[in-house]
Length: 307
Image (cartoon, rainbow, N blue to C red):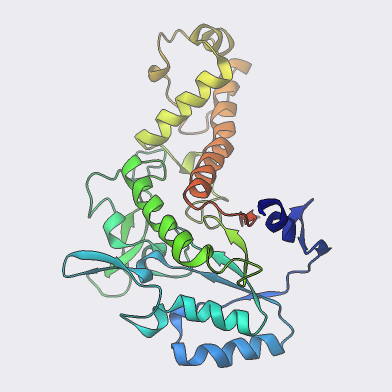
């Protein structure tokens, strides 16, 4: 049964195959959470009439997990607000024979407050969650859900460190609910969802940032040193190649700014941190996919910038 389902949607050599045939992704993103539920049917019909075959949509965590009277609860069926009925939205897509790329984040950007993250995972609200740090040791921020004093912008809030264990438990809770309530019952061919996107443009829409912009949080540095152990096997080999005299992995700090290397040993430290960036990203994607297991293919949307 599993092999049969897997064969229905595949990605090979960068091409999506549906039922064994190459499938061209002509798509549009529809932020259902910004519209009135009564408009969904009409808008989807218009998109279909434009020749589109695929709808992409984010599932904003902060929109669907609420805190009411001090208690947290999920709403995927519109009990508290009509446009939280994402189940009905996806059923409409199915009725119109529109396929869906589901994008549950956990961070989605999408011009939402705090990138779609709920307030309760902000380090300002939960001191047990550490903040992501840049090379200066400053929190990496995103516009939150409170206005600045002048009322002209949102206050910058620190983002949670992606590998922080307390935050990861919250992400597991969210993605587990998405899997149980949305992905599993509405996966292709029984439902319209045929691809699942993890993260957004990296983790925090930051894939295009230089290596020194993230992540210098304790949880990230712990994983960095684990990667060094796996790469070099012994501290003596690390010291021999880097021209250093460390006695323990915990003593090693990553580079934090560019300084012209005087010799090859100096350059190697930059190469270590640059190599770590993809291992860091891979580990976070691995964790996200383990929280949301599905037979559907996963996709990501890394960004690049040109100057």
